[in-house]
Image 1 (cartoon, rainbow, N blue to C red):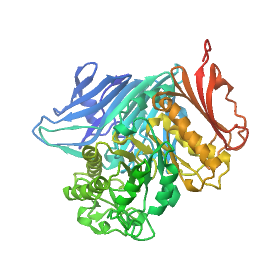
Image 2 (cartoon, helix red, strand yellow):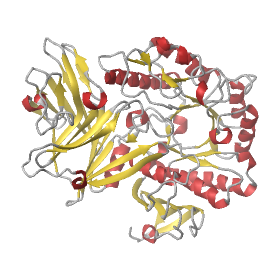
Image 3 (tube, rainbow, N blue to C red):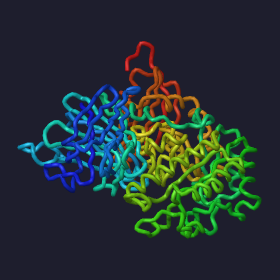
Image 4 (spheres, rainbow, N blue to C red):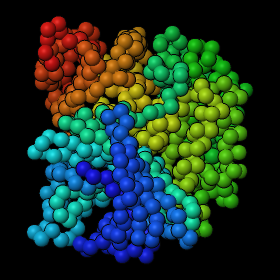
Length: 617
């Protein structure tokens, strides 16, 4: 494996192999650059026009962190149309693994042989073979996660990479001759409408990429996930359970409803009670009133601070939902077009949403008062940040739409940092219609993230298991929506799914009878006893027979180990009774169990395992 750089300057000749319009790799700048120096942490190239590229590839804790710095020491501007965060050649692989993602169906593993992607070398070695994918816009996990893994099926070795990019991005596997090349980073001019001018004497650094190698898909994914270093608030480090009332009121929170919930939660071991969407609404539509952030006087006649104080009086930390980067059609903010993003001079409108220009000082001041000020003045300790539409290919305000987008997304991330600076004890949750921003650079800014909007779906444990390959389970907040009408198997199915990440309760818990609420309380207690395995363990097995998420069949078993302990989370789907999990229990004894007997459809169980003395795994 050899690190190098893929880049393109405006005016370059395209590469050969019929690549124009298909790939921007292998063009004139790449063909004519020369290597100046190479060591264990960086490789430096010089282009024919005198430009320099410093390709960083720094080994750190079992992975390699990569980025590229383009320097323009010449006396004239340079316009970049592509610049890779990483580029590697000399790989031999036969199989490509990716993670798909649509709304409420995040993280499905897609594994394909390269021959099925028509990626074999041609008979003569001519004609580019490429598989290029990514996303455009401000939802970095839409259609794909910024991740890939390549498997050498002959040696059993794996190569994997994650991009740290919250705007438009791309990854590309390509070859003309053997072996393979892989590169990725910001979406280029062809794919993401991006180009950037670098003035004389200036430089530009790409977003980071992280590379891992190992002997299994599980190993390389674990390395990538553990390379993420999130900002987790001190009070959230012990992984307490959350209650979010969205699936209780569905956008209609009231002081009375919150009071009933808080009374039920007092002494339960749950730490947070989060007021979700609707607290600010003017009309019946919580979604259409986003942007002004004035608490509704009918829902909260004495101000929303009264609700926060009441929640604290029951021993809970109050939380509040915002969709701070967007405005919606019924808000006054929707018409403040001087401060909203535009494309071709027109406000960018996506459904009922428009988007603040997060690089605008007026906007930052507005949000500092309406968001940070409201949280501080009313004693909230938890912030849920939602984001419910997509800017698209880009916006005005820079030399290209893609660069305008990149700058505004970076400004959004800076505002997350400003919130944390001003309110250092605040717990921040990253949400984007569920999982559309489950990307490493976003995940490093927050304590937790909504794993999905699959609030009450049978696919919840499947999605939650998928995400073990992509984000830290200690950050992955999983819904367990409990209703009195649900039978005990349904209650246990949902509660046990929460052991695949951060357990988050919702629903009309104040209506639950003693038996069903008792199940929830036992789950919270059991969760507290095993959370260290969720936080620090290694997910070595994700075994799932289901293909359809709406009507899953068979079973799923997830084994996460930590030293001599393990956590086995099992769910049955249609026709999946008595799943074959004996091999996963081999060498262990069950110290504790929560859940059903797994002798029927749609049941769940969690086994806390300890290695037998003298037993083998």
